[in-house]
Length: 311
Ligand code: HEC
Image (cartoon, rainbow, N blue to C red; front, side, top):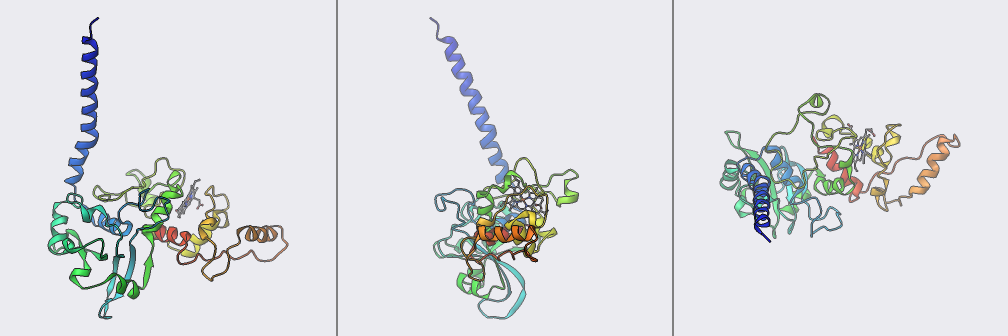
């Protein structure tokens, strides 16, 4: 009985497995670490935080452990007017995106500028803080840790905010609800860009997990949807029931994301709403019932913030 054939087979199998692991894991790793983050990648990392898919800190995908994106028109500490600025607030204990905790994600030049000019080395997850995205004179984007450079604390910044976008938590809703079964976040370099906007560039995805490209598109690409439709009222109606605004839409209703109470503190009664709507459709009442506005901490509000922030 000759075992030689088996041995050759084992060596061949081992070689093929190692080679494919090398090609799929090591090679792209080398390539990715040499790729600098674009400004978009930095904004995405700071908007979404560490991980918006399943993770041990948020096992039921409720949008926990996420930063808040705010729009400022005054300095949170001095109250003086400043140019409209997006800031990213990480309350104490919120996990930082991997670009802040691992070398080699931001790209060498972005990392250097973020450390030297942006003082990101001083940031600490346990303390939290506020971050900004800036560019150097040579147009290298970098992250600035505004808590070190300007003394902006998380609490003061949240208080001074003109607008708060819960887009990080909203991305978790997007993943959990499976919007990516129908929608992509990836216009392609075909005639696609004419309707859905600029395709992403290499470097736009550094440190983002998951990327939610989607796979097989049954509905419009959403990468730039906030640029073509930024109406919250439209989004509220469309998520409550897409057929209210697009009569033949195949998109499911997401009215259960409203939770128990609406923005005015009234109970959300979905079966009751349907009954009133059907009565209107039968011509028994003159007006359709109003769509309730989602409460400030509802999942619907988080999802809408995510969608509107896709510019
Ligand atoms: C069964 C497939 C399907 C699923 C799942 C789905 N959608 Fe849609 N969506 C559509 C279709 C089809 C349209 C176009 C018709 C319309 O506007 O309803 C659309 C339209 C939209 C639009 C408007 C797009 C534009 O170009 O203005 C937004 C925003 C949107 N969907 C967001 C979502 C989000 C967020 C989710 C997950 C909570 C989701 N959709 C889940 C099929 C789907």
